[in-house]
Length: 357
Image (cartoon, rainbow, N blue to C red; front, side, top):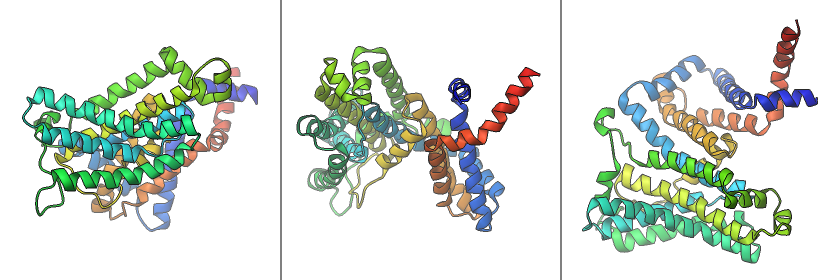
């Protein structure tokens, strides 16, 4: 058994790949049961993503907020925290970027855009920091506080838009002048809504990795996440690390909000309900095994499946909701890695025998 575990430790990248394949297989079986053609469905899905420059650009746009909210959830998780509040932090980031972009519209764009992006990140971090403070100073479970803060963020964002930014007679804010400078390469992708937030997300993943694995502060955060009592006994300030972790996680989510209003919509609407970015980010973080580069890959997969599901509906007459079964199955197999290892076990032993011969 120990030798078997050692083999998987050296080839650990195989387990997530097999989990993805098993998820697609489960989706195919469900389609067959429902009377649909899985080959045509998956073909339509990938054609939707790669069929034209516009669709490919829009797929990248779909992936970008998932990268940042996935990083937000994963960063907190590495510190022993479960950030359910990324959705509210995205909303706060959106609102901050909208306020700065509209109210300070007289500033030059080379100042206005960075201010709006930085302001969104800081406001998202401070919003998440409320839950971090309550956890560190009062011992209140962050799952409860972040869920409650999601609703507060929704109604606060709507109040600010209605009171300060609303166009009379419409259910949205004014257009944001700063949003012009967030887009790029649109002419190469048939005016797809690509924006600089994609590069911000990639830079955030690099920062995540360097900070957690290459700095003393990151080591302390990971130690607190693994065992807060041992970390405290070793002289680490557990409460400070909790607040810092939630703040950084909130910054990632706030940046996702900035990208959405400045790079995609160019205004902020009054929301009837939660936009759902943060909850999708939980799935992305789990798919990526809470590793920053794994989260990026998981967001690419999740974004492709989400955007491509419309192609399944239009071209193969398959309900797009079926893609959620595929995503859920992949998450299940990622979480239940014992099943994946059981499926792979005969192949590993076969390979071992061939080497002996």
